[in-house]
Amino acid sequence: SSDWIKLITNIATILGGSVVLIVFMIMRSCLTIAPALIFLIRVGADCPQDCPAHCPTQKEIQSDFVRSHFEMDKFYGVFYEIAYHDSTQPANWFVNARCQRSVKTPHSGDSKNYKDLFSMRVGPFDGTNAVCDLEFNITGSPGVFLGHWHSSSPFNPNLENINNTVVDVGVEKNGTYRWSLEFQCKEDERPGKGIRFAAVNFYHKQPLISKDEFDDMQQRLRARGLGWIIDTKEGLHMVDQKFCVDHQNYPAIDAAPSWCGQVADIVV
Image 1 (spheres, rainbow, N blue to C red):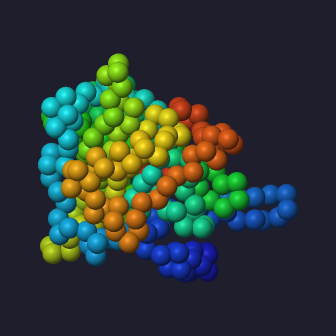
Image 2 (cartoon, rainbow, N blue to C red):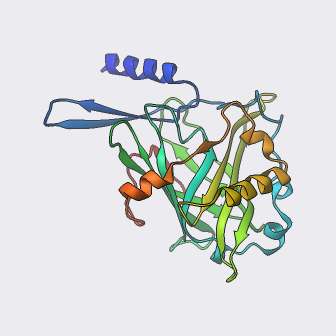
Image 3 (cartoon, rainbow, N blue to C red):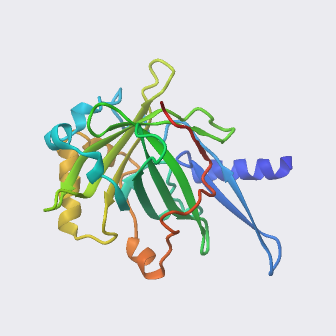
């Protein structure tokens, strides 16, 4: 009803502009829980206030190793998000995004794309798992991708075609990548409005890592000129993966998409 729409809109306003996904679980009775998910998107996140005037080019922010030696086959696998600056993962008290995981696999039907089954636990109380079946275009440049999907939210239906860049990776002795730094950026379509969306994700194949290794990842990010994104007012949000491991709050690695609010669209 219109009253519910007004209520949800008011909640979004109170929680702040970084909200992209609000999970609203309605208690109908002591025996029945009727989950209703409302997806809200707001333009801007914390840019352009704390960001450069324009998105950096994808190649300029990559390490020499990634530009010259990155291999897709070594990029695939199960990664846990250690930390992030990403308004599509609201950390407010209500949504409380947590237990983030990225399962990267080749696209079985299209070698020009790879799949990222991204999941996170969202919502109050025990929450529920949101699973997003994302797809990224593989370009001719190593570690340079284009995420192409359409938001199903009526509040901002045009957050799409977002550049995704592998900034740097941690290389194991066998050549596979134990961690990756991924950066996304999109400029506003309106001239002079600056960066509309910017995010960074710290991914690791182990859910729990040492402070020294995390510090090294941050230093690698800063070395590529991206320190500004973790120095914004929103800063860097740490994920409590220990709680998630202890409670096994992860979906199956091949879980079906659910509660996502994004409609994937392959780039060809």
